[in-house]
Length: 396
Picture: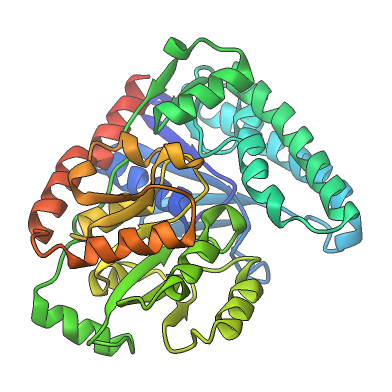
């Protein structure tokens, strides 16, 4: 019976909000439709640790088991917490191995891959979200102070070692050829041993609205109805390039306002930039929300302004919502997979990595009058769906 069990693993899960968390939710939903028994294993990031049931609960008909990320609640004991968390995770997977020895494991974090392998699970699937070294290179420009730089490099060195081990002892899946190349370089694996698969997108949530409903939604969200809206959804970190998007408004007399949905360490810097550039009337900032589809439906163009992005789930959500996309070309110096999506008919590329080039691309995208939102949406969700990804992972 344990062969009918699917264990999906990540370092965070709902109610945490993000592309990785959403991918597990959708995979769990598809697995339940196939009569698989599904279990989620994640840390307690984003949950109320005072809830007596926070380490074991049911979410949307799926059993969720969590392990404590910080067993001892003192920041000064972070190294001790790190080791304790690993020991707790190892014990958890050993218990799961006794309960379901033939279960299929799909993990989205290298810790969980290593814990599952150490517990004796065979054929662990590692669906790689990003490469630690590449993420650090994209973030390095924002590091300030010797201590932060040293700490960051030590962190990356440790996680690179663990990620290399996870890649070497698992069956590896990635969402782009860019990611496959990075994984092969880090692990020493041959490219042909790394499977490139397509993620999904949910057309029930992400779909275009009629013009009148779009206006009503803008009013509901307190957004201007007489201005075009360029949307960004994601973490507020240097790698995402939001600073370039904000600067793009000031680059020249722009015909659009910017909507940011997310959170992160760069928020204060964004607020300072907005104030210094007198952009308060042109930028609207919202926190993470489980109803992010409303912002896609209210916007007029989506901006993928990342310097580093191993895939970009938000691009698919935008396309499925009927939005054209603006992004940087790989030749501009970014490390992204946007040009691999096969959706270039609906993407306008900025030629170089600058606010001016981004502004010109957004303006060009807005000026085009022939975007067919329904055609964009259909082209996206027929190519990318969660059922196909589940089948690829289970067959792997």
